[in-house]
Image (cartoon, rainbow, N blue to C red):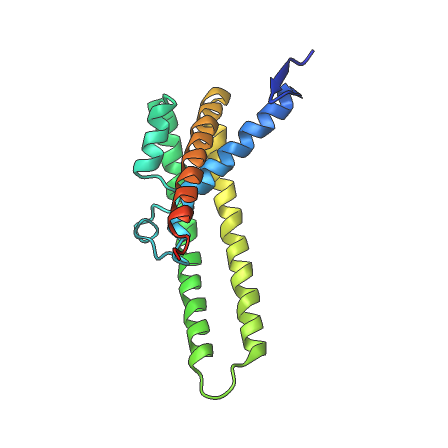
Length: 179
């Protein structure tokens, strides 16, 4: 018999809760890797150093907070190293695509719309490949962690999201034009 939990008045099965926590873990991992790609393909210092999975300070802090063992840390480090090695040629491809885009925009005469569309499709395909590789790495990390550790990371990321949302609201309030 599955246990029932109540969240905000909703009754949910244990399987649904696991799905929610797994989603939060994936979201947490996505947030931790996002800075590597914030400036395009590999402009972030970490991506250049093969640290594309957020395996530096941020990941270390999360692993400290959930009480990860040395064995878990070693496995996660290997996952990050393999993902970084796989990502290196993809990041180089992204640089080539950006250069193609720059050349399209500065070409004399009208911009070649067909070439621009081809570039867009190539960029989307590359981003899809990168996204798939990131997801594979995130799921591999999730397999290393216990359900309790994943739940704790989910809680940490939810709190972080709330804090970020509050800061954004304050920032947006400051950006309101004054008359």
